Image (cartoon, rainbow, N blue to C red; front, side, top):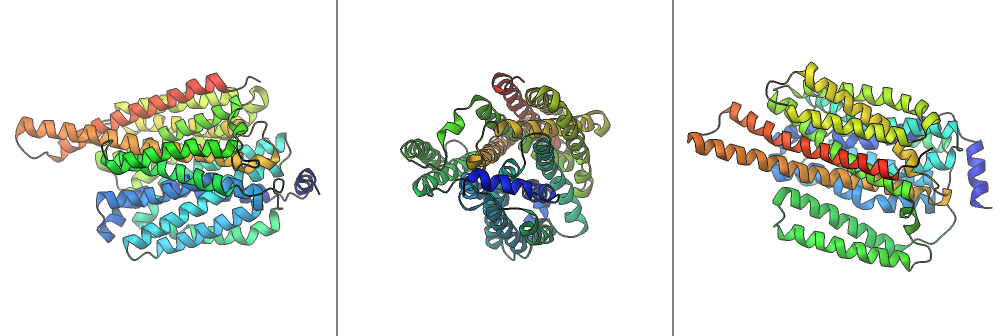
Amino acid sequence: MTTVNVLGRSRRRLSAFAIPLICTAQLMATLDVTIVNLALPAMQREFALSNAGLAWVIDAYTLAYAGLLLLGGRAGDLVGHRRTLMIGIFVFTVSSLLGGLAYDPAFLLAARVGQGVGAALATPTTLSLITTLCPPGPVRTKAMVAYGAMAGLGITIGLVLGGVLTELASWRWVFLLNVPIGVVLLATAPRVLPESTGARRRLDVLGAAVGTAALTSLVYGMIRTGSDGWGDLTATVALGAAALLLVLFVLVERGTAEPMLPLRLLAHRTRLGAYLVAGLLFACLYPSFFFLSRALQDVLGWQPIEAGLRFLPVGAGVLVFAIATRRLMHVTGSRAPVIGGTAATAAAALCLVTLDTGSSYPALLLPALIGLGAGVGTTFVANAASAMTDVADADAGIASGLLSTFQAVGGTIGVAMLAALAASVTETELADRVRAVSAAPTPDVMREALVSGFGQGFAAAGGLAVLALVVAVWTTRKR
């Protein structure tokens, strides 16, 4: 039986619960990127973590997630998208349970690595399932809207729930929350999702090993650079190894009959543009949310639950503009929403450059948060559709994995670099003020120094979004 026939029969059997299940899986994976942020101080107090150790609570997840996404995307094409999704959800759920029960820092970090592995298997499979199970037209467009909305909402809801759960219950619930969701998904998936695979082919073991090692080295090197500076020997070695491994990966894939990553996927202008836009936007969004979560608490003095609830306008913006984008795409295609969404994201990030210790939530923060939500809701939906342009069903998993990889690597590099920039500006300003008055900095001086650092961070984030806008204008296909 051919692949086309298998997929055709799968589409006819598609359950009404299939898309909600796929989107819930996507929501669970993306939610975990940010839900930990507002729980970090509580974890630091319980385990007496250093600042470097605390950073690894985030980085351990990101390192495993970004490093294994390409492998996770291709696994779905080879062994089945539903099977790969279920394996990913299982690993993620068990790791979340272990994270919630962690009794020391090493155990917690191991659980975070496990969550990253599970998410790397599940995330690219969600988009590939939509592409292979939904026929082109209104059904697929509606599913893409839901997928894009869940990707954006996961980031936002994570910030809200992280603050609420930490203050009202315990930081452990930011992990334990995933357990009942994962159990329901595992019980439901075999009943509502038909299996779909690409054409039978051999696993490119060498390509998978070299590609995973290259991405892992790149992400680790950027994390080390952000925390220890460009002069750090370990960071330099990791980045050098990543460059060599990436060259080797290209050579291996060009010489392999059945490569893990067909390089032709990167030769398509619209698709490559969508990958670049995704990477640049995540490099803007992740640091922006990181700076905002700190500014609301450390500068404006709000408690975790107050800070978390103030991110709700982002979620509202995501939902409203994701639905509007679905209607707009019927008329304009994906070009106008991608350009408009990146422009809104850039404007919102640059607006936050003016944040200071006396900033008004209604006058400054609320419009900026709505703008970020509008940018996320519009761009994620349309860009996901662009990323799957002209992709054969047999390559849906790896094409989706590439989109997730660019997003994860972009977000990781953005946080590492922009957080380091903001910290450097803050430290320099504090040192200057201490020398000027020959006294220890007061709390007001420390807040003002933080504001200066965050301002530089928001400016750099806005610049990345502007670059994404330029790429979108240049690469997206006119209707």
